[in-house]
Length: 116
Image (cartoon, rainbow, N blue to C red; front, side, top):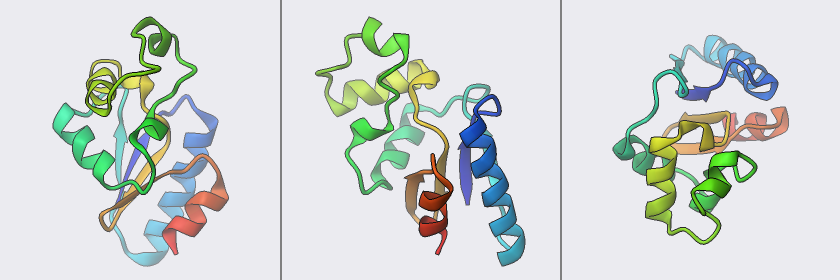
């Protein structure tokens, strides 16, 4: 199990605690990826995007300045992935990956449902 985590984000910190608790109770390993410090590569992002049940655009933080500066409103999926690779701040957070699936865990309820 992996979590793409931003320690400055309260929702990400809450998700990390929830994931740590789940991992401990279920004997699973949890890899914490502080994606702003260790940005994912383009290949990592392509693999991550393939694990979501939602459109790729849902992985992008549209409220970030870089989103507007890079004119990403009509960008292709490939362009969005390249933008996230170059500007990891654009990646939605937190992202939890488990058993070949991924979810944006902005609410405890979303994470709880995902971890069942």
